[in-house]
Length: 126
Image (cartoon, rainbow, N blue to C red; front, side):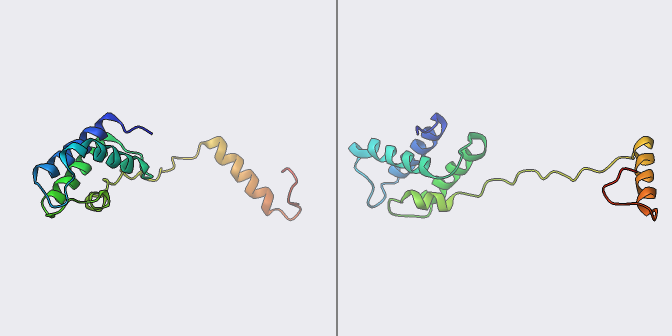
C-alpha cells in the first residue's frame, strides 16, 4: 500500500532533520532514498489508519523529540515510541429521555394492569 503524500512529506522532513544533525550511524547520502522507502513501508505496515489532521503534528513532534535526544541514527520504532498519543475523541453524552406521549403512557398502563390481573397468562394478548 502506498503512503499518502502528506505522510511521505512528514517522513522526508523528519529524515532530513536527522540527516542534518550528522548523527552516528546515519545512512550515506546516496542511500537516503532507499532509507525513506523503508521508513514509509514501516509506517504503512502498522495497523494504524493514518489521518493527516491528527497524525501529521504527532509525527513531526516525534521526529523533533528524537532529534533532540539521540546522538545516533534512530530506528523507526524509536520514532513511534516518541510519538504523542492521539487526542481523545469527544465523548458523547447519554441521551436524556423526553416525556412519554400520552397514547404510549396509556398503552403501557393498560399492559401493566393486565399483567397484574389474576387471570393473566404470559403470551396472551391483553
